[in-house]
Length: 219
Image 1 (cartoon, rainbow, N blue to C red):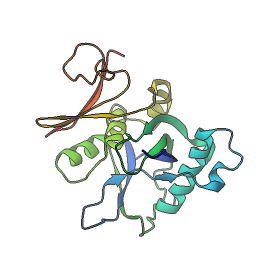
Image 2 (image 1 turned 180 degrees about the vertical axis):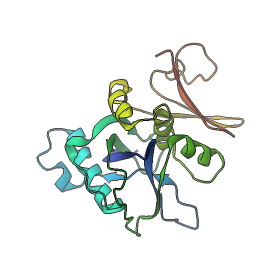
Image 3 (image 1 turned 60 degrees about the vertical axis):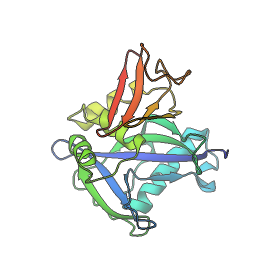
Image 4 (image 1 turned 90 degrees about the vertical axis):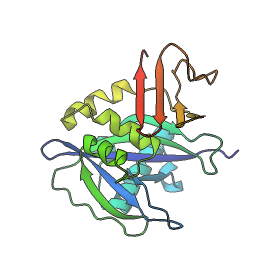
């Protein structure tokens, strides 16, 4: 089991006129369709040098990666932390990723690097979820959960104000296979410690079946 690599990701938002988020498509590998992701990547030595803590180093990495992948120059102080995701031990490559959110002007130009990313789109959270369910785009679980959170908001200001205050405990996903797919349990779910999907109590989980569904209630 490898130690997770410190990383930073930034959810870039704009109002045009409703809240939209920026998604980048990773270039296909091994003939497989690339997923749509937020800008981000692992912490490099320059990001960590002089940083007060892991979150600050990840913030620097998120800003640098956004400039490299999408051509957007962000102010580090404008990023707000909204979550932290730690890849399960069963994964061949593991990351400890801080998720931040920030806003840019509606006309901010995006230029994908053409190497790691080959396309971008501005899209509302609701349309992102629809496109995922219709297999138009492929979202990873952390992206899907984050987009689900954002679907509640019509204005960027409201999202940036509410999400940091609701930040859950760090996500340590535990994946359980089901007959129809999988269910990922997150800390706080009543079944998390025992690995029980069918139990009463608080819910914090992602159903990955024909239609993905995120549950967070009773916490």
